[in-house]
Every structure is written in C-alpha cells, then in structure tokens.
Image 1 (cartoon, rainbow, N blue to C red):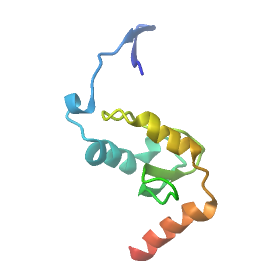
Image 2 (cartoon, one colour):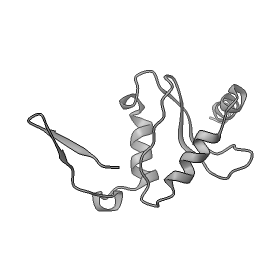
Image 3 (cartoon, rainbow, N blue to C red):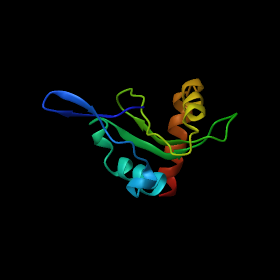
Image 4 (cartoon, rainbow, N blue to C red):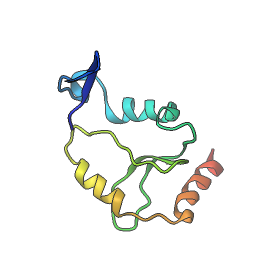
Length: 110
C-alpha cells in the first residue's frame, strides 16, 4: 500500500521501508506502542485483549482486540500473510459472550 507525504499542498510518494529497516519488531514494538497509546486510533477505544485467539476453527490471533467505536485497522506485516489474517478477521463474527469472557477471565487472574 503506497504511503504519501503532503508537502506544500502536494502529494509525494514516501520512501518504501519495512519494520526491519526502521529497527522495529511487530510484537515487541508496534503492538506494544499501540496497546499503550490506543487513543491514537480512537479516544473511546479500550483494549480488551492483547493476542486474542479463542477462535473455533483457526489458530490465528487478533493482535489487539478493542471495544469502542467500530473501526477496522491493522498494520502491515513484513511476513506477507496479511491477506489471510484479514480474511480470518472479516469472516469471524463474534458474539458478545466470546469477547467479554476472555477479558473477564484475565481480570480475575490479575
């Protein structure tokens, strides 16, 4: 996906980069920063789960599951498996119980 800069009212293509080039790791850096600063994506978001994976038919995980405004978001992975992850996210229909139960269990443990 192309990224652009705005300079003097004109779009210019940003230089291609990767997490590796920028010295960032997905889980230890990007995910942690988003979890700690979730308001950057939306003021009314609350992180329910970091690494939600309680799916019936898949071993995939949602990095950060939040409640609040309905948004679809993600960050690009250097691994190239984003289309599959996105498919799992879009195909999954969560009932409220499935979302709240892991959060309540985590609160009971902590």
